[in-house]
Structure formats: structure tokens, C-alpha cells
Image (cartoon, rainbow, N blue to C red):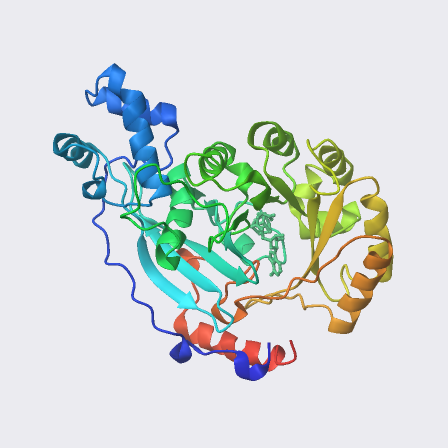
Length: 411
Ligand code: SAH
Ligand code: SF4
């Protein structure tokens, strides 16, 4: 990214955003398992012998065709549609803000209505288009209860876990906005095409620690990978964790998606400081859980994320330690240039040092792509997400953007 590529808010391409939706206390059908949906229909008087068929119809409309309005369900009788409207919703969250970076990255700030008690919450998700694929980065919590010292989200207290509906809605909404659902007029029996989708991959790498919200994340990911619905291959879904060891085992057994570990340090003393959950689950336990992850092979590797912090974890000694630590684990190493945020004391390693580090790892036989920072101009890059409750004030934000232009002109 050159200095002139950094866009200021006035140069952001304006995008129409949706109208605020009515705050709806009705339960959403989005995020229910088939069993839950069947039970909800039964409770509203749908006959037992119809339930399976109704659930399949709804599943197809919601997840294959992406409708967000019961009236669009052409093969569902009017009476049934009225009943559904009276008791349930399939509405999308409100888009509070939509930003498009000059590199094509998109960031949405979404507001979910309270269901039952509680207040609305706001969440960010980010879409990153690349050659031949597009990745949606999904949040699992509002804020985070962990306090990794280099992470902006970690400075925001945990507001609450997202529900399965809220996690999945991020994917449905991205598909809406990107025109990634098939034509609404498509014939019955339409299935989700396997190729050519704008959102081809999802990563649980937004706000929050997904394994501290295991049940909702599990439900949402199993629905996202359901072959009669959204149909994303589990190989195209990656869950990133800071290292919640017991739930890593459960992820392997109960969800079966690809795993990424936010490693960032190869010694316990340093990792205790950078990723404090290390005090509870130190490296030895973390590596044991990784070794035991089911289905690992050269084609199915664990991704180890390693943020490059100047003078902290970026020496060749660290690179050597990394190779030793990962011995015997089918692994990819993802070097992430540190993304600065206002108030941080860390700096990104010099580019030369990042390259030396990468070369060392490459020569030990590991692929170690350096993750190109994406969407930095709209604060959409790793660790920069932070939502409404503590969003930067406008003046602070403009000052920060000026700092970004000054500091990252050479990227
Ligand atoms: N909580 C989960 C999911 C978040 S993923 C986890 O920690 O794995 C976001 C990734 O970006 C994590 O690897 C995180 O450590 C990394 N990250 C956080 N802050 C960052 C920053 N300022 N610059 C670069 N990467 C950062
Ligand atoms: Fe939470 Fe992950 Fe940030 Fe750590 S890196 S504070 S676990 S979001």
C-alpha cells in the first residue's frame, strides 16, 4: 500500500445501507438447528407429518436462496406464511455502516435487535476479496474477555456472546450485499453452487474468542457447512483461537473445521505477556492439543498465526524456536505484520526483519506467507476491530488515519 492509496473517509465510496429494522422480539429461524426449527413449528400447531417437509422448505429458502422475507416463499401457502410472520422473523440485522476500502475490502458494522431481554449489540464483519476466492471474517463475541496485549479488540470488555443467529447472519448479510445468492426466481431444487461464490471461505477471526462461545459457534458452523443449505466445505472454514485447550479437542470432534492458533510467541514467559490465556493453558498443553487434532495431513494443516512485533518476538532465535515447537505438526505459519491502533505501545517489525524471519522459516520447509495487511484504511485489519460501545471518536479517528498515512506509506 502506498501513501496515496490510503483513503480518507471523504473518499470512501458511498454505499446505500439498509433501513433500520424494527426491533423485533420474535425469535429468528436463522441459527436454529433442523430439530429446533421442527420443534418451533410444532409448537405453533404445524402437524407432525408436515414438519420434516416444512423444515426442508424453509431451510432451502433461508440458506440456499437467501430470502429475508416470508412472503418471498412462493411454494409456502399463504396461511402458513401468515403464521410464520406472526411468530418468527428471518430479517437481517441493520447495517449501521458499510465501508469499502480502496483494496476492495469491505467492512460492515451491524446492529442486532435485542431478542427478549437485553439491548441491541453492534458487531463488525469484514470481507476480503482475493484472486479466485473471497473470505469473510466473522465475529463471535461483542468485545473479548481475553486481554492479549497487542490486540485492539482485547481493550474492549466483553459485552456478550453472539447467538448462532447473529453469527450466521453475518454470512447471510455479506451474501446479500455481494449479490452472492442465486436468482430468487431460480427453479425449485436449486442448490448452492460449489464454485464461483463471492464468499468462498469463512474465518472466525473477527471480534471475540470463538471457543469461549462454543455452543453458538458450533451450531452456526454446522449450519454454514450443511450440504442442503449454505454448503460451505469444512475445509473452507477456519476457526482461530488464542488457545482454549479443552475446546480445541471439542472443535476437532464436534465441528471438524480447519484450525488456526494465535501463537505469537514460542516461550511461555513471553506468551504469558502477549496472550495471557497461556498462563492457564501453556505451550506444552496447546501443542499436545494441536498434535491430537483429527484429520491432519499435508493437505490439512493447522495455521499458526504469528504477529510480528518489533524487538519483542521477531528475532531469528524466535524463528528457530518456532520451528522446534512445531516439529511433527502439519503446519502453515502465517506471519502477520502488526496492525497499529491508537494507544498501543507496540510497533510492527521492520519489513527487512519480517523477510529474514520468513526466509528462515521457509528454509526449514514451512510455507510462511506474510499476510498483506488488508483494509487498514478502514480499520478492518486483524486486531483492529472494535464496535460501537467504544468506537473511536471522529476526531481521534481522523488523527489516527493521518498517523497511518505517515507510518505506512512504505507498505
Ligand atoms: N480471538 C481469536 C480470534 C481473533 S483472530 C484469536 O485470538 O485467535 C484475530 C487474529 O489477529 C488473531 O491471530 C490475533 O492474535 C491477531 N491480532 C490481534 N491484534 C492484532 C494486531 N493489532 N495486529 C495484527 N494481528 C492482530
Ligand atoms: Fe481476544 Fe483474540 Fe484479541 Fe486475544 S487476540 S484479545 S483472544 S480477539
